[in-house]
Amino acid sequence: MSSNTVRPAPQRVQSSEERSARIAVTVFPLLILAGGALALLFPAPFTGLSPLINPGLMLIMFGMGLTLTLPDFALVIRQPLPVFLGVVAQFVIMPLLGLGIAWALQLPPELAAGVILVGCAPGGTASNVVTYLARGNVALSVAMTSVSTLLAPIFTPLLALWLAGRYMAVDAGAMALSIVQIVLIPVLLGLVIRYLAPRLVDRVLPVLPWVSVLAITFVVVAVVSGSAAAILTAGWLILLAVILHNGLGLALGYGAAKLFRQPVAARRTMAIEVGMQNSGLAAGLARDYFTPEAALPAAVFSVWHNVSGALMAAFWRRRPTA
Image (cartoon, rainbow, N blue to C red; front, side, top):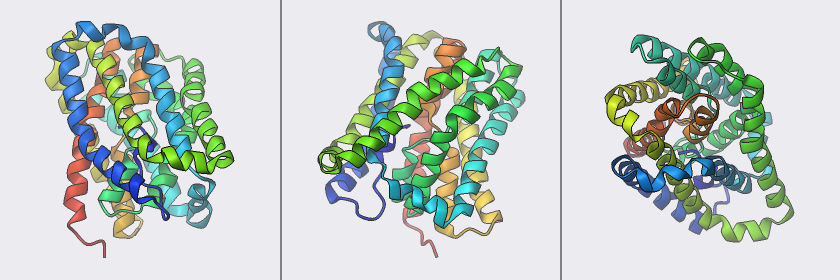
């Protein structure tokens, strides 16, 4: 899932927002599974939704900006090492894993480029709630997600050009401009509105998780319906690539944090941040700059990483962090 509107705010979280976020992150995998299955089995009614993917993503990123406050970025100054480690791991581990998986499975060029593009995307912002439920470091999760999202207009197109460019032509400049329009401007607009009208925003915070859930489900339905035949043809190969990408990302993220002797809560956070991607953004970019088939790994990733994230949260929540 790729919306920060489903995260619990660190520290002074309102109980209603927290309750709403916990329900949303639990129900989300079921909704997205249902939406994906419906679009796969009955694609015809949804095939005209593709032009609305980017506006849907802009709505999600605007919601993310509404949930952010300036203190969310204070951790970057107070504890720069874990944030730096997490962001570097995000933009090193996942892109290289995508390339390695594409080579190992001998994926067709469209699918290979799509898998790599998922790896080049910033962190998935549902990771904030998954971190919370897994008893990780929520403030660190928010900082890592926010920083990687703000850096995405630079690193995502450059990494895509370097790695996915081996399989398909990449217009890095146009892709960077799209990310600015889809991600950066809506996030900054939401952040400004939160700063100027905090009381008004606080009233709508409990609703934002559900806006995020519905918007991402909409994006998945739009992507899947447009390529239902291709999914049915190569579905097992895409699923294998996605499971490997997500699973190895979780494991290597945890291992990187452990290597640098981070506490257990930070290890869990980094694992989740590295393993969960903004796959909605990757799907939109793949459709715009590659082919509809290239968006398939992102669509499947949107489903799988939320299922695996919920399972990891349930596993870790029962285990101590000390």
